[in-house]
Image (cartoon, rainbow, N blue to C red; front, side, top):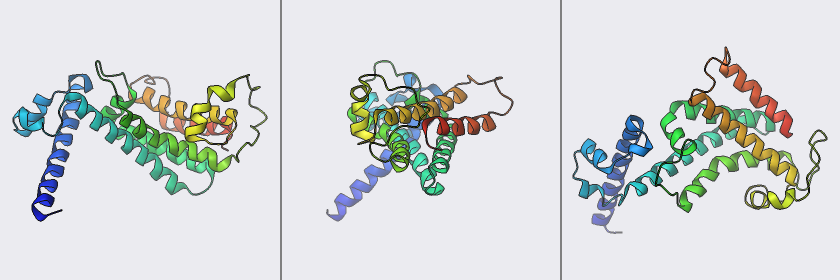
Length: 230
C-alpha cells in the first residue's frame, strides 16, 4: 500500500471510530429504535451525505454497534476465564462476574443485544458470529471439564427421546462430541447468566433482595453445581 493510501486508510479508520463513538452517545440518549444517522451527523458537525459514505444506512450502523457490543461482552467473558486458572468452578464464576460487570458498565449496549429487538431491523449473519463469542467461552468450560461422551451427573433427569437430535446444531457448533445432556446443561448455564444480568439491568429484581451481588454469586455457584461444573 502506498503512503497516500495508508494515510487515507488511517483517516477513514479514525473517522469510523468517531462515528461509532457518537452512535454510542446517541444510543444512550434515545435508545436503538431512535438511532438516526442525521442526529449522529449533527453531533459530529458533518453533513449526512458524508456519513453515508461510512455507513450507508441506519441498519449498517446498528450492525456495527451490535457486533462491537457482542465482541466486547465476549472479551469480558474471555478475560474472566483467563484470570481464573484451570478449575472449572473458578472459571465459571469469573466469567459470570466479568459478564455482569460489563453489563453494568454498558447498560445501553446490553439492551441493544439482549433486550427487545429493534423494529424493522434484521440482523445479518455477522452478528450471529459475534454473538457466539461469549457462548464459546462458556462452552469451553464444559468441554474442559466433561470428556467427550462422558455420562451426565446422576442427578440429571432422564434423557428424553430425541434430545440428541434437538440439540444437535449446538453440539456440532459449540460442544462437539458431548452428550446431549451436557449440551442442554451448558444452555441452562448460559441462559441463567444472561437472564439474571438482564433482569438486574432492566429493574426486575428491585426490592427482591437486600444484597443482589451476594445473591448473584450464590446463584452462579448453584447453577455450577446443578449443571455439573463443580
